[in-house]
Image (tube, rainbow, N blue to C red; front, side, top):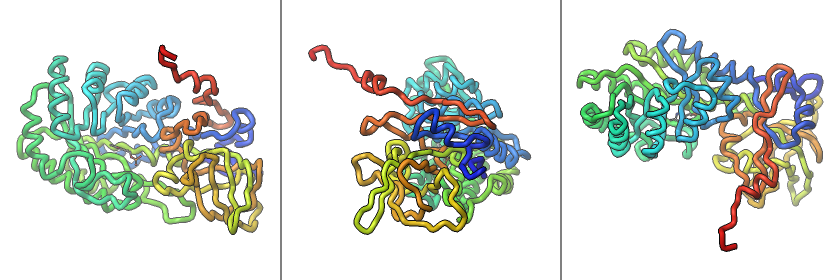
Length: 421
Ligand SMILES: *Cc1c(COP(=O)(O)O)cnc(C)c1O
């Protein structure tokens, strides 16, 4: 459910007509709904209500300061995957003891940053990383709380590029080696083992792979405890999928996911941590663009937009589907026409959809990409010297720009000439 609905013949973000935003900030732009972000976070809170838990928002999905602030104020922790994200989380007011640090390539500088600034735990992904963390922490005279990210060898049945829990994926340590590495970790200076971490992939639309992975984690918890480790926290990752296509069968709800966690891990007396990203931010944002031209090709018509693959790369990168709808509400029963919907970038991959049926739209009309709040703005670039597009936040009948469009001077002046020129 989201808060982007037609009202009085026009698509609104909560109580704000999108044309009002377009007039003030120009197109294209991202717009996020405070109510949807809040609702999605609250759904997870309710789903885990019976258990000691912390929800760490995977901020790689959307790391705008205002978005982080909304979630932090609701009690969210953050899952960060770089020193930059750590700094963003702290800047948004998230205390270090609510930040978990994931990622396969944490540098010593990043470890230093988090250990001195405050950290809830490191999710360690390899033995060399474990050794480096031990050195950095003991050098500082502190102890690093860790979980080991185990790779359970479960196929998440999702897109190739976002499956992370099969043995051929680069993430975590093989679950078969986990006991050895825990034994090693327990002896290292500056390391305190506190739990286990797992994250098997993104955009999962079925609970079965999660359940298979969590059952393996339950077994491992018992084994590690028998080996003498204190396992007090299980980080179960993120990955619950969202409906990208209206009218199709919806993925499982957070409530079902929570019940499954309760069922598989509820008797272990551990604190549960989850790291949802997409489910919180995905349907809390849309991308609004304008049609520049309607171009008639041979046997197909192109809608050429002012948004492009550099603004929203998911279709080009994952073949992802986004519902694309006109901002002016189509008359009921209006005839639909097939369009190839493309951007202006000089790449054939700059295609958002092929032969997509749309009600009649023409040059100057606004259209909206649904489900663009996750892995949208954060993955954008300035390819073709197209400025990063603004992000706007709506709350009720208010809206505010939360990241302005840079000027061309700002973009050009980021480059510097070498002294010999
Ligand atoms: C990407 C990622 C997440 C979030 O995944 P979503 O599909 O957005 O929920 C959580 N944890 C880790 C370690 C990740 O890499």
